[in-house]
Amino acid sequence: MKVDLRRLLNTLNLTTPAGLLLARAGGCPVEHGPDGLLLAGGWTFPLPKAAAFTVGNVILYRDRVARSFLPGPDGPSALLRHEARHAGQYAGLGMAFLPLYFLAAGLSRLRTGDPASGNVFERLAGLEDGGYQ
Image 1: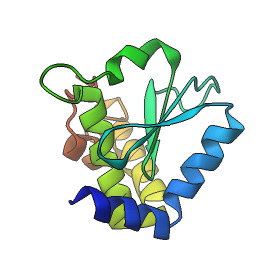
Image 2: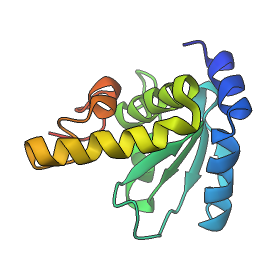
Image 3: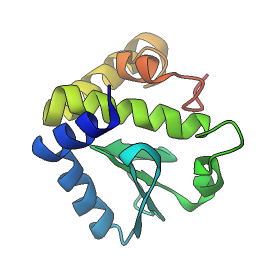
């Protein structure tokens, strides 16, 4: 999906504004990242337990993974590419992504014992890029 289209859709479907509200609630400074993404570091709330998660075009992450977002000589990091794919999923599904994601995570936990390996959204975003087995 084209970056500008993803950014527009995630603004119109209100997922990026929701992500910005979460960043503000978590006291996370927001900076511009590559490909129209917004990076909000310093997430300290206990949930979600993930090192990073995306809402619209906003990627919220814990300080321990800050270096994982730095682009290397070959471009964006694997984790950043993974989270960017989730931003594309939000562009296609809007707010419906959230309940569908949690349903997929629950079904994955029942089938595989973990919320990611059988989760269609994580699989499409690239399990290995996201740091999953």
